[in-house]
Image (cartoon, rainbow, N blue to C red; front, side, top):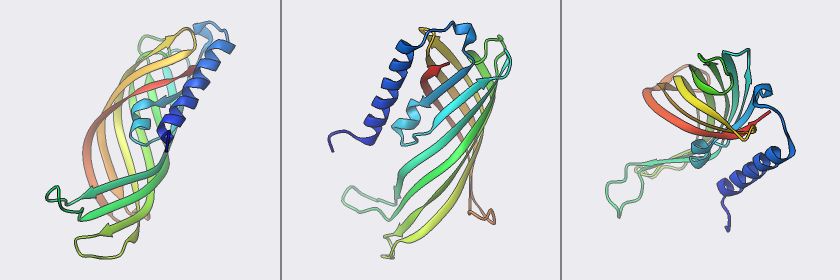
Length: 197
């Protein structure tokens, strides 16, 4: 394949941002909405866009989609000559929400701090190669709760560039929420690129 899906997605998104910058003129003080994508998310296979709206000067509300067309996890490989003992091959879809407090009163740009929650339902197959078993269907619901801190710049009155870090916990449950499969503490972050309008 000449171009990967990530490259095509990012190219179309950048073209959209550039077109929006060229075709619109507005003062930065009027721009209370951001449409963004997390570039680190795209690099790792999560293609979800995020929309944020300012709720006054000090608060913002971000709503995002989580779209992971294919994700593989492999493990149990004991040497470079061995095959993997197990493989998860799944896709996931979900949503997330962020509440952001802008202490300097310039929402939705500048420094922000607040809670971040995401939910993703994964479905696909699990293959236990160590026991030579056929692949079986698998489903899992992932939930995260983080504290996020970041800073967003508005460049040329239209382009949003933001950096953020977050830390919190992630849970994995059976789809019917009958069993907690895992609980872990994680630290992450990202780079936002988008348009302000």
